Image 1 (cartoon, helix red, strand yellow):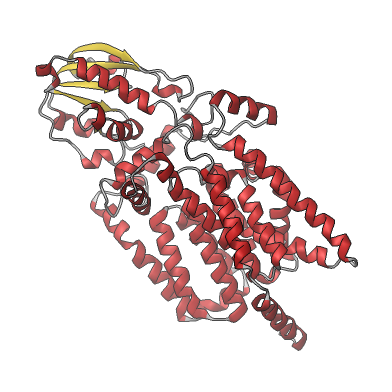
Image 2 (cartoon, helix red, strand yellow):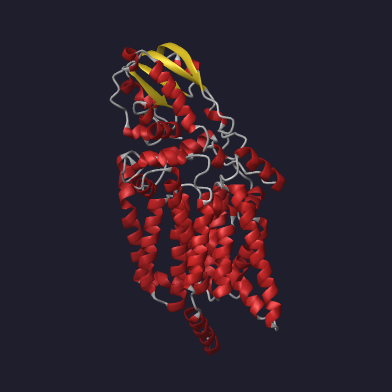
Length: 524
């Protein structure tokens, strides 16, 4: 490295270290994010997956068929706080507020001043994908925290050369794996980016390998659980692949969805960030830009769901805000710099105001649908079988209390002696979760379910010979029962079409439920 390059590097480090961090500004934007998310916390109802995660919280373990274990802890916290819908929605809203805060911290670490920090936070606050994801209790709301933490530490390693920070990257990566298994692809992208950047020098030091060891150690409990249960997650993924459950997007539609889910008006910001990290003023940190490119290519090759890249965009928003602010700083007149910044902030505020009503369950469903149509919003389906007037994220919040009420009507209408030997069979984890949440108050027994992790928690100690069976067709039930009678019909105009099915009473099981359990079990 030449003397001029050494001076330039030193100045860059000093700039990053001396950039002021306005904690009040961070607090204001984090609080704004929290308020935005909580605006929809009372709307519609529990999402299908939220009902499942609440059931997982009632069966805490080191693993589950289709998710890593940390999400059950988030749901357990919600249950400890009462488990109401606003409480459940508060958990991801807090995660979203922390993502805004750490994005601003990253912008500061990249050398951004107060405007760059604020604008980066505003972009994350306004991005539709973040508004949608942070409105539902899931691992997806927490995923960016682990990724952004790793990105911040990478910048610190580049700036300071402190290799010991790899240990903390290992901690975050390990916890990230316990939050969501797809973090392994983030780790792959990070590894390739390190090899392709000057950070490859770290491979000759022990700390990066110790960090990898820490990550594996933290992930080990889930690995051991998978081994002891026959790797159900891998079987589940293979079943999903074979069934063609997920919508497969070609490269161009996939890239188009990246633009849409972050809002087209924000494309110049994160694209500027990517270019800056790869070939611009921020190329000192090109490990971050390379990481995005590798991750994008990996997801394209895997034909992944469009939102799998969502956790990495706050990194690009931070880099883009810093690059745009630095460009404005080169303008000769102070007043000339003010109006572009004012316009940038105004645009993001408008995006946020529109996105809140377009993506959160605030408006009545018919008005929400009309509003989305006026805006030209047509949510991309991620699963083939899910159909309804609203997108799946919203449609799957309707109909659960009504379904349980209908089952309760059927169950309590049975003669006492028949009711005593009758159970309720839920065909999927959403139905089971709804029955467990709303059913006890209506006198319903614990639901029986062989879907996903419920299949591991079963078979239940059921000694009866009749079942109220949800969602299955008569032709599927007749081989299992001596008598099949339709006793109800569930329908909700805004729910998902797959749940609008007849309800049957299956009398006289031909085989004990425990013996049927291996055939009833389904991981998909």
